[in-house]
Length: 323
Image 1 (cartoon, rainbow, N blue to C red):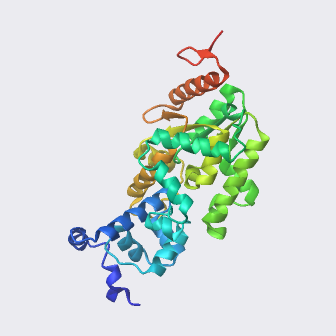
Image 2 (cartoon, one colour):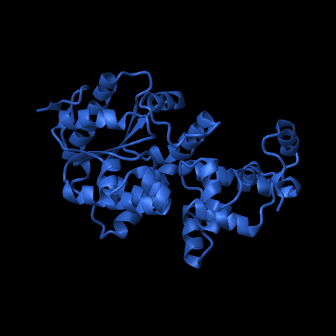
Image 3 (tube, rainbow, N blue to C red):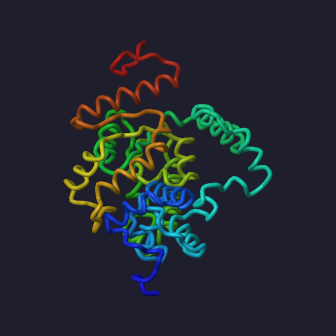
């Protein structure tokens, strides 16, 4: 179909048209668009990447995200496939699939974040023989968006603690026999997630004590992130969007922002979409405005306190054990 005559793709690049459409957006379409943007941000995908995977034009996808296009059910199914989720999840409610889901949802509805966290941990224990991992406090996993300092601070922290260091992205490449970019280009996101889970499982099984720098998108797969939380003490290395971008560019790598005219906007959406997941970490260290050495001091102090707390010891303000 000629895009110029398709009512679904009224120009997403015309500011006047967008402004006029904003006031007349259907609430359902607006909510659907917000949901698509949120899922895309959580997975760290650009609009161009999702459009290509869904086999729709970027203008189609842009109008869907802005809530100005009434997409067909087939287009929504293609977009859901590109985002690696069910059509029900794309529409915002996948908890109506069975009576048990509905009953569980009723129990959890209106609970606080802390109560939901306790429920998640209890359920994980229930379905994993009720046993917690005794080595969890000795495995330290750094999470956060690329550019937060995981690859820089990870080896330094490992040296301070006398532990081995694993860069999970490198472990993934060893398993796949090719680079992360080639995995995505040749096999797709789903294959990459399988390699990511396998690399994490192998790292946990091989090391009772270790420092792991995880890929920024590890929170995009709930099953893998659940395993990380269950077997490792997690630390969110936090930074402002500007610092994330500056550090990545300084390294000469602008993926996944290559060829994007809205790089900073995309970065902010990704960070906003993932922040709620990163915040599930046991500790948070803000590296914004700090040198690597300053951040390392904060990181070591927090990690040592967490390790000592688990072992039943006390520490001073610097994280040193008190006899």
